Amino acid sequence: MTTQSPPPATTINVLLVEDHDGQAKLMKTLIDTQLPPYTVVATVTTNQGLLKKMKEAPKLFSIILADLHLGQDSCLDAIRILYNLGDDTPVVLLTVDEDQLWEIEKKCAEFPNIGGFLAKGMAGPGSKSSQRPFAAVLKAKLDFALTRHNALATRLKAIGQEAQAEAHLSDFMSRWHALTPAEAQRLLSEAVSSQEFAGWGKPKWITWWLDVQRKLQVIKKLGDKIAK
Image 1 (tube, rainbow, N blue to C red):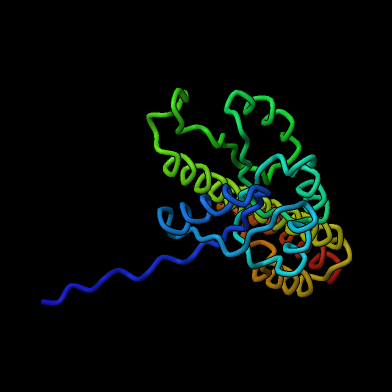
Image 2: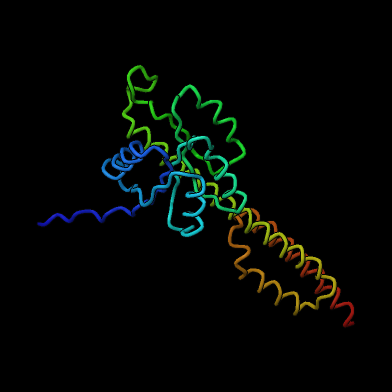
């Protein structure tokens, strides 16, 4: 019996932002050879380069791995611009010293798309984290940033769907007094099949359904009285 190999994992494209040529080559080699399915598909050295790449191919990169300090500039300046433009690509920041991480995390609290921080020297001699290979730590940071980003995106989508459903329901209920029973039943059927209600949980549906049925009964009784 022939054993089939598992299908290759989907590539996760990384945009590397590093102004030191030697560090950039080492980081790219490390990621491409030791951290599949992550692969560095582009490297830039400045904030301007980062902004240009994200403008040219906004959907190409799954994650950004960026050195916090780019010469005299801070990578946060470009990340702030991207975030204000609505780009929420997850980011992992690199810095020189792990003792700086706490201060950096506080400064980055305004950016929910920054999902990880990593000191370049974490695996070096005397490092507090030297027992963990740098590659393993980096992969854990990249994985966490992506997972966190996907969870936030899912939650925001659910909130958006619920807000649309609430608006639809509010409009729906505001029109009850002017509807005939037949019109109310038709509108109810349209609402039930609407995609806007797709994110509702069962308890909310039950509460809403009972309220709608009660209102339908009231309308029907009023219609019967008027007919008499």
